[in-house]
Image (cartoon, rainbow, N blue to C red):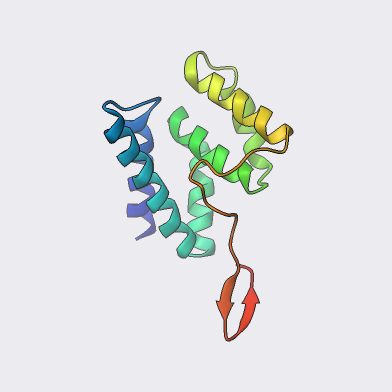
Length: 129
């Protein structure tokens, strides 16, 4: 299941690239990435580990989305990926620089509007994943 969900995220990120046209298609692809990410998070540690592996994906679009999400959660390993991407021409480099700047200013939020690892309700007690 995890491999299929990773492929969904990856394919949507590649197809979306900088901006898919028409705007409705762009929004649909963003929703596909968000839904795949939610499913990976619901898979627990194995889903999270699989998502982190996408930091090494061959596609700069995939690496950019994954790094932005992980850095929004405080995952500092994403900084090196974004720094490398920031040297790329065009929107990939610009987006990476913007993400790093937002992080440094303390304003970075999930590009998918998700909260970082919400607590799970278990037998009346809150527990972190």
